[in-house]
Amino acid sequence: MPPSPPDGPAIDDAWVLARRGSRNVVDPLRPYACLVEPEFMPDGSVEDVATVLITNKECPFRCLMCDLWKNTTLQRTPTGAVAEQVRWALPRVAPARHIKLYNAGSFFDGLAVPREELPQVADLLSSFETVIVESHPNLINRRCVEFSERLRPRLEVAMGLETVDPEVLPRLNKRMALADFERATTFLVDHGIGVRAFILLRTPFQGESQGVTWATRSIEYAFSIGVECCVVIPTRAGNGAMEALASEGLFSPPTLQSLETVVEHGLSLGGGRVFSDLWDIQQLATCSRCSLARVQRLTGMNLTQQVDSAVSCVCDG
Image (cartoon, helix red, strand yellow):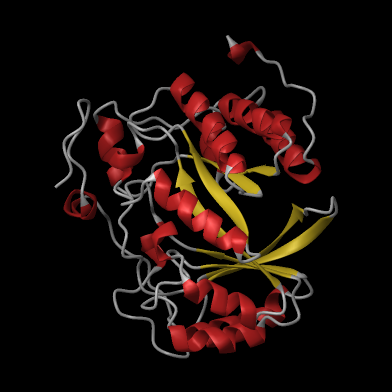
């Protein structure tokens, strides 16, 4: 068991699992969601990107803040199921030229996406220009290169950096050190594979100003080691564990103003693309006067990679 932090419980798999609610009912032969959204591309254009949320076995890592397990199975993904999900989804997300296969875990976890299926999945994606998948840094290995070499599109791997805060990263039950993330990034870049980093804004055990500081430092670190794209995710409740920490005063979600500040800083670095994750952003819309304008501003910065005029409001204090 990991050591107990000075301001919170000792967090391990058992602690996280004990606070979970129920799973959603999913079909292993169908993705649990498909959508298409515009995204700013590295060449400066804005193009549609399809996202297929693959149904698969739960990730072996029980990260403190994760709620993706709600749409996973307890059993190993049946061989052929992932390819069938992709085949079913493609006509429903066409004609996007870029696709994300996000899968509530790690694409290179053989229990979630069977290794023998990877060539078939690669062949199904031959018409795309970019394929983006998710993986835990500790599962980055030769399998990624084999998949990339089979693909016609360029491969990009999204990994959770979360935070470079040395006091917090060990508490997230991610079983990853910064050295692991850097090793995985270097390996991918050396093999011509792009890297996208997920960065949390205001993790548990951080105050508002700490959250901003460590999120901006995390973007700086990511760009310094070869990451091309950073996605800033406001840490949210919803998985049981976060509610438990909130009840002890150890977690609160960030403000929209903090998200704006972090994205502005990231864009000012010029090191690569910086996006704010606006999924369920209404959870942070606490001011009736300015929240809509702030969300519109963040949306605009996502699509232009330029810092828009600031929103001012009495809620700024």
